[in-house]
Length: 118
Image (cartoon, helix red, strand yellow):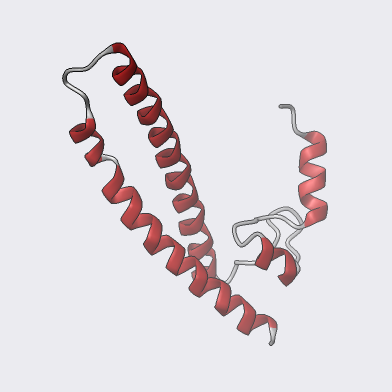
């Protein structure tokens, strides 16, 4: 399979994942209000709070992933998908298949991590 064919396969995968996330992100948070225990003991309330916090974190992670997918799809439209933002060179297709949302080559990612001040 050629690079353009493999990139097209990645684009379709990203579109599918985007649609899945849009449905989940759009449907998951409003239902939280219905689950709130109006009456309950401390254990029920604590369980609800833990569950709510986990759901909120998952929602946030999925919303972040959705943003990254939208950026990748925009890059497809502009002809910039698969190009390292640091070096401007093509990212190897194997890396893109493993990490479709990556914006950097391995070398650029390593360099970024070296200079990062976490």
